[in-house]
Image 1: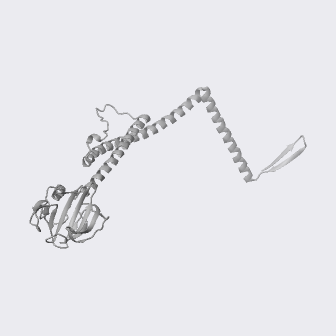
Image 2 (image 1 turned 45 degrees about the vertical axis):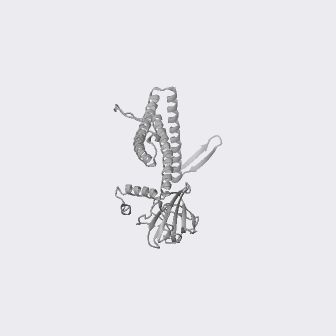
Length: 319
């Protein structure tokens, strides 16, 4: 395309040559400018009409805004209903957790009254309605408060159960020699060396030399030495001024300060010290005063019977 522009005042003319590419670019630029002009005019007309309340434009704007609000409201309502259903499921789980808490409380030896109760709810279902955002937030806050209470309670229960576990394993209820019955019992008897009445401060377990001697409970080795009367002797401190003594051993396998667990092999049966034959002399001392070990062992047997569903262990049945 060839254009000639003539200026009559200056008596001069100018020639412009437009190729196909230039013509297309010019057309696109003109179209873009027209689109911007139309969009600006459309925007100005609708804003002006909405502000000034033009009959037709104002009605159109209100319809568009109303449709947008309704769509947004439907979207929010659907999400709120879904969240409300999830909250209902969480409330049901909290009720199940409360019943579980009561059972765990019993295991920990705590009273059910110490459990925070979920407020009781009920009644006939009259009508269903969607929760508002404020109501849903209130329910979530209440669930959060209940969850925090459960966390605190479970922390206390964990501490209580751990303490019970430690105490259970620190009380000498494990038989120190397996499969053997106690011979000479705790109490007054005729001394085999002097023939006179003397207090026997423990239990004697007859067994062959080398038979394993087991720790009756967990603790710390207090003494490992040779005693003129007790021979090779081991004493274990179980805390709370509770000590067990194992005497006349042929060998000892622990040293002072060692940590031992319930049922650990600590020595072997022998006849060292003041002894007439191979056996274990087993004592339990509370605050340094000898106690009847049979009371502790009987408590362990009772616990074993309860765990076995009422069937008495064979070794205990022969006693």
